[in-house]
Amino acid sequence: MADRYATFRSLNAEVLGISTDSIFSHKVFTRISPSARRVNYPLVADRTHAVSRLYEVLDESTGIAYRATFIITPAPQTVTFWHVYPREVGRNVDEIVRVLQGLQFYQRTGLGVPPGWQPGDPGVERDFEKVGTV
Image (cartoon, rainbow, N blue to C red; front, side, top):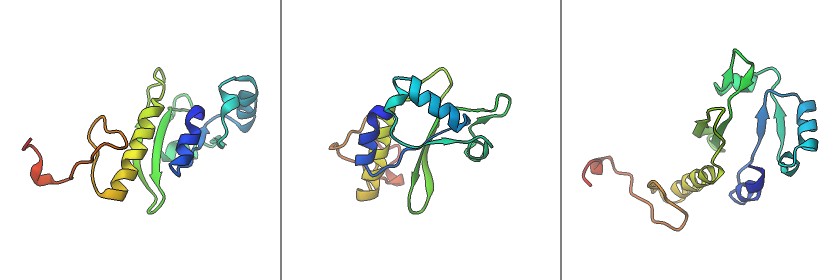
């Protein structure tokens, strides 16, 4: 995520890293981990688990949140994308960027985006009457 932070900012998106770790753990992590040293967005400590519970990503048995991604539109504030990853699988940041770009494309044009869509590709009309006709 840190390597693509500039891309998210260019798309007018904010990035937050939220974990059940303490701010002290975050501080140590950003000092000793080469990858964490590149993190230049806020890290939030969810020690009370309020945020993790609210977004339903807390493993209650361990007190650890699952790795998850949420895209929240600013107005109205709505979760428009969420993905919870198994602990054994890392995020596909390129796909998160593509989803954000696709949502913004839809907001601008009213057109949906097909699988594999990339910026510059045409969108598709969202018409329920055409479902199953192709």
